[in-house]
Length: 366
Figure (cartoon, helix red, strand yellow):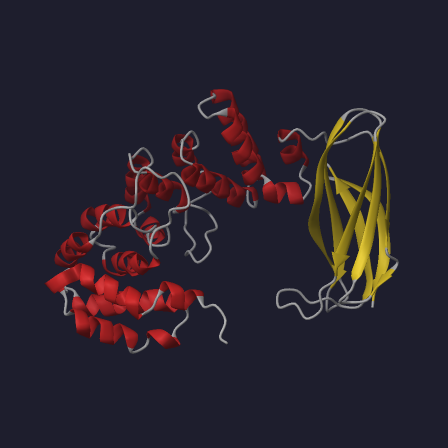
């Protein structure tokens, strides 16, 4: 029995036939389908998008303005504007955005409005980045207007398309500061689909300029334009990478004191065989009331003998003065995992509590 294939679920003959049907008599539908399917099964997911886009270009008018009119006429009704989250759309429309990015860079007056329409059916976050690189000022001006559009997919694009680090997306030449004006318009949005993008955007920035993110979140909190509970969620989501790193400013922003008054003892298995489980036990006693972010860090031996730290989440705690909490965790050292290889040798484990290091211990992985 063959396994699940995302590429086959998103791009298959039925989807291609559906796309062709939207164009009606504007293209030769059966030939378009045949041209796409001739190579589609042999391609990976991203290559399928590019392939369909190129085949579509061969079936549309050579003149981009004329082709854009054909595409816009073929678009189905927009995604339901009354929804508020997780309505990404149908991937079969992604080749339309790829076509606009490939053919419309010199036709901003036509290309940008068309991308705005396409994104109401499927996000064009990857495609708008080509315009940001080719025409940054004009594209940013368009996005400033889109950030206050009535359609939440259009608003989300202003954040998602300008993220510093977008999986699959080409790198953009913007500084991390430049899109902050867009985020200032978007952080108070009432739609989680938009605020999640804003939080992800900030999380990207934390990898480059953490202090900019902390200042921005502080300013937004003071402005009071977003509901407190939603801004709380955005802060947690935006600061998640910094929290894993034990960044003091991020932890304090979330209410965790940088120097908690606690007594910590921790113990881990002295030796563990790869493929088996090591047992961590930690005791935490609070001298005063504390809010604690409890993680543990394992410094894994790499192939060259050096160590690389990896943070693992354990628990968030509110501990009263004099209270003692005991936590236990079984950590499995997977054997033969596709994403991570364990190497035998002396490893290191320690607790990371509110960014501080406690209970350092070496152990042997066999």
